[in-house]
Length: 329
Image (cartoon, rainbow, N blue to C red; front, side, top):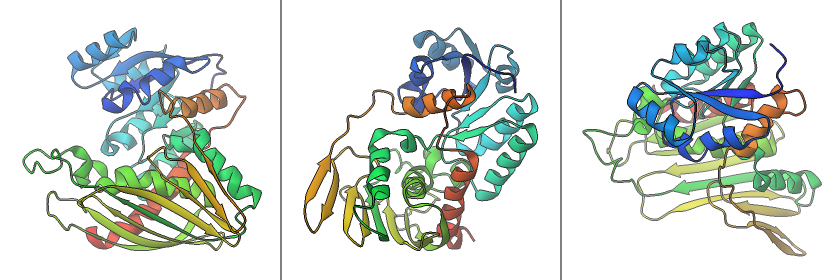
């Protein structure tokens, strides 16, 4: 790979996630710029480029990948297209940054890892919570030993179905398994499962049940699972997307105390021991992927390390596959 001093990015799939969460982060990160975007609808690609002051736009992904002024590729399409675009980028030796979940299945993840290793290019994945100060603080607390040895972690997330998800004639792609790999569990629970991998290490065993309780769409709408970490800690989780009300809560319980935090909210992190309680609050970044993008740029320039690569992200896909396999079998 050519030594870089500035990383010039091209985006494939400039949809909603790139408007604020990620796109501007490529422009605001140090030693980084966004030079090209692609969307199959050329008019929408042109509109995005003009609004975000991006010099080039395409309606053909291969043309963007081949552009000599593009050093690295950010793939922000639905998961069904991640593998094919990673393969195209690997052909020309360009690093890739892929939205989460990494792919529709662990098998596709393995294929992506293999093609990037053969091309000797790095493969990054958008599990950006690993780079946020909020979750790095949680990891520091755990690593400090203040809550002792970890016994177990419990996670629960639920919310009602949206009006968009209730539209049986035109459901969103996130609840179409052929496109997303599964339902909202793949889109949302993947963040929690990856955070747990980051905080507690890999999961080595997992089993679960998935169902479609409301029959609003083809994919599962509830998943429950149990898992064991290589560290010896146990885990249990339930995710449901057809309930009343909202809940997003994780508890990591150890021999000396526990940590309570949400995956998606910004409530304070809460530490509880038998001697005291403490809380920490973190401000939400304007562009939530920017710290993660900066870590990728730093690694590509040779003076840093991104915490989310293909192999760590593939582990999350493996866990999800285990938890839903009875539903899709």
